[in-house]
Image (tube, rainbow, N blue to C red; front, side, top):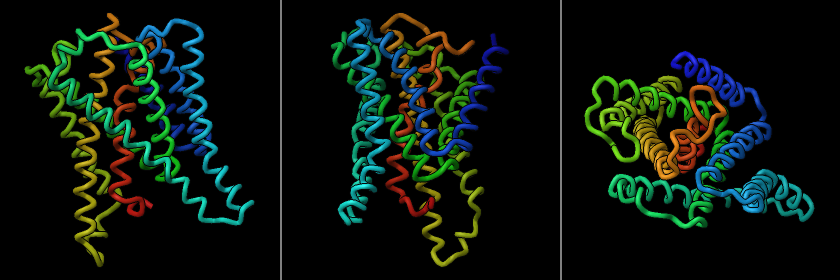
Length: 301
């Protein structure tokens, strides 16, 4: 079983890294869209969206915004030429305001799971609320992972993925070595507070690794204090992103436990479904993107 999990993980990591580094922006968005749509079918199964018409509506309301976001900038380019109004292209950045909704959602989920995890298991949520929640988190993850790749390049996407993967691995081994206090026993008995600390420590190490990759020449430049501030900002963002990713994982564990299943699907040998592998990424992507916006796009140009 362990060998199957390792082999599957290696194949998945290879495919994802190749997609990040080699695919053009448009095809990368398409790749992420396919993964998102597969995850959407798993979400519908977990939340009892069984009627064919409801499934079609859910998928349609995912695909239409994806197409709109993809071609929004292209449309503005055409309008700017047709109307001789170059400034209209600035409206392409208006989409970034949509990052507020998923960030608030995941912060709220983190607080609720932390403060009232057992109670959430006993609450029967309305079908419309579950459908809307799934639509919001899936669409926003696709949107802001795609925008991260488009605006900041493959390197920043790769850093984000390494950050999440390193946190998952560190949490597992730290929890296995020192874990004794349950993080959310009723929702996910295997997760421990010590494992969470291991994940947060890995985030700090990753941020220092990225600083080393960029080099320390900035500290001897004209504004060394700016380099110090950016390093601190990136470390804080990395730690908070991993924290959100942990509670994103717990959120999907909550949904699975309410459904009475261990995995979201059976597509990946030894790993379950797509949602089982990307739950942390779904939660963390909008938060990481929002943090990068706040730090400043010019720093990573």
